Length: 281
Ligand code: SF4
Ligand code: SF4
Image 1 (cartoon, rainbow, N blue to C red):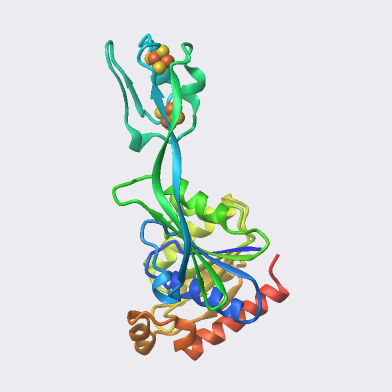
Image 2 (image 1 turned 60 degrees about the vertical axis):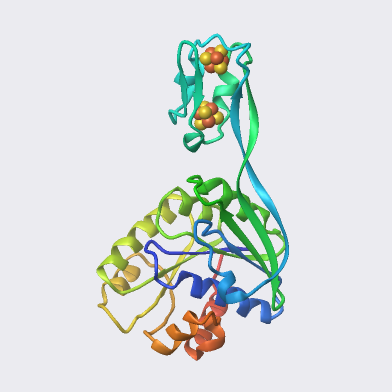
């Protein structure tokens, strides 16, 4: 089973829930891999403190031209949907940051002047913590293509283990890549107008991908009832809530795991576990 912990809005407590749930399940004997797919700023390791086990680089394929064969016909340029190629009368250029590694230009070149070369853009780090496998994707500084690293990170987690995926916030390509194919998406939200707005976007994203959705409301004692009303209207199960707790915020700021620091988080984890046992697909 793969459970994605996502949120339309950043800063809602997504990593709090993901790290706590992975640790909570692992302590109950479930083989679990915590997958940090928030590759632009992975921070689950700050709370799980894994011992490093190994790492490998993540490559993507980028076209390379054989200048001796290229006739500068520009077919590759017109084929590329991402405007990553520029063919001039005497020069050929690729803008690597725009390339999506689709291979269409290589297939379209009538002179077989294009081949593919590997370019490394990120790292997968594997660690162990408290019986928990911790897999972290890290996008290289300066790289803009998070999606291939997210896909490699999620795909690398062993399928025989329960996988808890800590997703990037938002509803962009990165978020889609991290939730796609999940058995359940738990959306962590907060009862504010921004929270509601971004929750609605995240719910629509999951519906478009035909994914099961449940929700957790963080800082539930602040704000208004609009998020609860929206969840009821959409028939989305509310797995539990967390109230605003300055002591928990301090513990998290010190790198403590929320589930160890807060009885309310432990109650939430029990509720989620009950739901996974009884209701989840
Ligand atoms: S399609 Fe091939 S031959 Fe034509 S410009 Fe591109 S690389 Fe050169
Ligand atoms: S591999 Fe795809 S995205 Fe990259 S340059 Fe070629 S056609 Fe464009």
